[in-house]
Image (cartoon, rainbow, N blue to C red):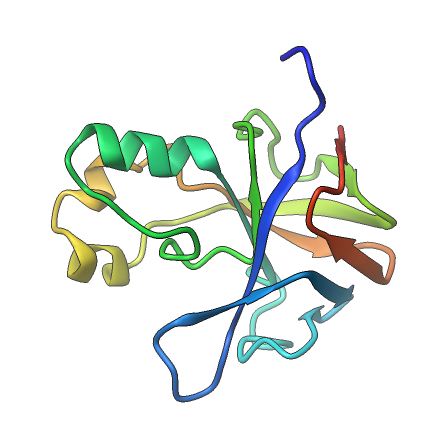
Length: 143
């Protein structure tokens, strides 16, 4: 990787809506993404980080998705799946820690039955905020 990875897009899940809300910035704390319907629900699944690579893999297999379609909160422009549980990294002013690899949920099968197999190792990972703060579009990821 020559250039540092950057945030491409930010999303939250909104109550009673299947569609994800696109945001310019997210406020993160130890319970997850403020305003997200999954805030404070599961300590190991607070913030989902996905790369554009996952979307490219799906597209190369004939599955076209809009950004946000994989349920991510943070979409980055480069694959950063080399990070593993316990690794810490920074986005903008927020220090995060990887809590687990993203397990593939049944929701992906509803979109397309091939998606779980296509993305089995490349959907992304979950993280938790170690420090509170704001993440914005175009923020650099420091690993």
